[in-house]
Image (tube, rainbow over all chains, first blue to last red):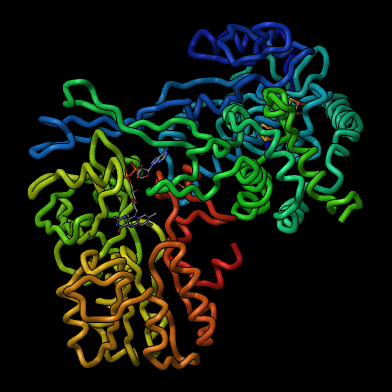
Length: 362
Length: 275
Ligand SMILES: Cc1cc2nc3c(=O)[nH]c(=O)nc-3n(C[C@H](O)[C@H](O)[C@H](O)COP(=O)(O)OP(=O)(O)OC[C@H]3O[C@@H](n4cnc5c(N)ncnc54)[C@H](O)[C@@H]3O)c2cc1C
Ligand code: SF4
Ligand code: SF4
Ligand code: FES
């Protein structure tokens, strides 16, 4: 059984203070009104922000930075010429410990999804080592953050895994649930934590019911259950709406960059001027960008914006779900909508292509 | 992956390999014989590929052209078209490249024992097929007919000329070559590779086809195999897509719900139709 404890808010605050003294603790904080970013904190006050909306960039950056070195090499003479000797040095050593505090359900879901992809068959140590060094203290949402979010429709509001500790706001105390062994150990260290008595259990249940009710209409953002998406998209390949959305899309790639479940990357080499030392790096890449599917000879398998945009939605709601047990690779966090210059909204896109051209539902 | 690679930790760190031999094959392509510095073998299946690194320039996916039976090292045949492949061109004997792999899913010679084997290669498509062709020829008695169709743009772009002669002279192999455009020296067939289908009688119930070449060639060749009546699950192809990681992470080679680098590059035509 996973442990559940009740921790008075001031006790939890001192606990966070002690974590912050020992190491890095980051949480979403408002840079300006409505502009949240993950940043270092020294206490738990970030958890009390009622205006929270998902951060501009998702916490993904802590596990997969926008740019990172995969390895370094040194060579005598120019690496491309004869006589070179190459020493490779893996860069994936253990990373600094970090605590992510106040991670909302949609982002916890996203972390689980990227974990799954980087664990698949060939373990990506660069991501996984940082992930191992991170502690996720998640926090439930009692109300919808803003009109762009549609987490409940995508099934990412209910957090089942991907966190070490999960907080629920009981007013004067936190209900703290452990999700992993690491979480269990941490829970033991929280001073002032007491077992959840019947009253607390009841309150938690009420909050869960209340949450369900509060998000009921969010589920309606999709006209059908999310698990139908692979099938729906399977039949919508030639839907004329793709062309319309494609005409609007600017191909800027911003939606890819802010998305917590986008993990595509490009790989490139950099050498110093003396050509003696160099690095192989990876950088975030975006499937909506023109060069993404270009092959040698200049042939591009997805030349047009509508094809690339369609690819993005198919990857999120068909290709990856088919690969990974039906898991939707869109959490409904709404980041892409908030950042999109022409307001392309995945829920609206899905609803549109689910309808037969002409209007009636298919 | 080889043991040495596993010990290195990161799946992105290539193993050093040394060029022990190279030969210019055509204007555009060079053949390479390589050894992993660890002394290990790749232990690949025909049709699998490796990621070849030139440090400071980048990586490119390249099919392993030698059969798994080759005792030391492995062979590649590289067309010099861009950054990495042109940087490789500048390398000489004794120089090093990085190797990751073998990656992807190859062709399975055990699954087609007792069949008539038809190979259809267009241009550079001979490179991945060559590994399988030699594997089949090494255990010739396991198969019925072996038929090889090979088409290139011109006589000057023909790869592995010596081996083609060997196959031509081998009484157990039905070899047919063609060029799109002949020159004065050329005495053989002229026309695209599909024209070769009229030269042999194929048994649709017992033939399995392996096809490698540019995307456009596939489309025409499968029209022929379908006309002959070779079932889609007895027709195999190798697909080329832009690749970066080779291991199903970077997303570049996604085609439908598969990563070409993981579930491919070799597929049955039946699988490809479903994508
Ligand atoms: C599974 C598989 C097996 C393969 N096997 C072989 C093989 O056995 N032998 C072989 O020779 N090749 C093989 N290839 C193809 C080979 O991988 C490519 O030719 C190689 O990756 C090219 O890399 P490069 O760095 O040399 O070229 P790049 O520098 O990447 O460029 C190649 C070409 O594309 C054009 N280009 C690149 N980027 C752009 C851009 N942004 N805009 C416009 N044009 C652009 C360039 O002008 C150039 O002509 C295989 C590919 C795959 C996927
Ligand atoms: S999208 Fe849902 S889970 Fe995410 S912050 Fe908003 S309300 Fe919470
Ligand atoms: S596609 Fe948009 S809504 Fe879905 S997870 Fe990505 S950023 Fe969030
Ligand atoms: S090459 Fe990266 S996913 Fe296939």
